[in-house]
Length: 412
Image (cartoon, rainbow, N blue to C red; front, top):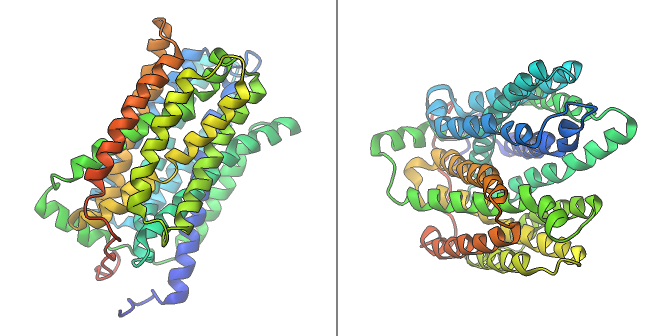
């Protein structure tokens, strides 16, 4: 295969390392707000109510969905590299606004609007950056798309697991805002090393093809899968701590450990399935993991109320069940829908964010109306069952992904 100018083995290797590093940093940035949840609701800090804290993420979801859906069109017009760089700038702006908000944290009328704008920029940064990173991961490794996308998302997952640890460390040092400061430093470093790189992706060609041919009918199967997956992941990622304390009698430490176990196993599972892909085909993994989620949601619904450590184990197992599903749905989509390969990542992530919003904002009113979290987890087992059925539609014909086209126009 002929190499494009500036895309020899060394250049591609450097670009690949930068993309993977960006995934790790984006994971840290993404969880900075949830990791500092106790700071935002602390009466001596921001003093937000639970409702104010929950609503703080609404701008993030809206902007993430919009940015993800527009990403492919923007890449066609301005190149994927510029979309990626704008995403980094948006994330940097978000973290900077969070730092500024600490100066007025006792004045909710000023601090809260700043936080809303900050989460909006965070959503835009996520929606622009993460789909671009997934496109790059597949393009730089055309013969191992599944593995490269899994590795990238494993690093993103590692970042999400590190953020709570960084918050705990900085709280211990007496300045929790060290995490957003660290995030700004890391993001500025990424911007400085990314700007000189070619970072071509083939997105312009595939986006133009998609514009001419429209959205394939099969894409909506991937979209439905992403929505249901978003619900399943968010039930574990956003509600596990409350379930542990209110349903299982766990201490705050045990509840935090359950959340850490979930995200750690999400990361470990992505690494595991990327490593054993030659022995366990990704398509088989894709069918098995939703069944794991059916089991973990069912177990969560019937866990005894006096054994919180069993809850930690079950939420860790749920992390394994979630681990490879989103990355594989992206790589399968890029393979199955070549006319819109550059838009698949953005589209899948946009619908994943819709599922996130359904679970993040929909569960609260159900709990307030008197429904138990255990019962809601039992209902989510049905969602996971539908996910298992959809996995056969989404992965239809997937033995190994077709190589990405590297015949993109210069600068794409």
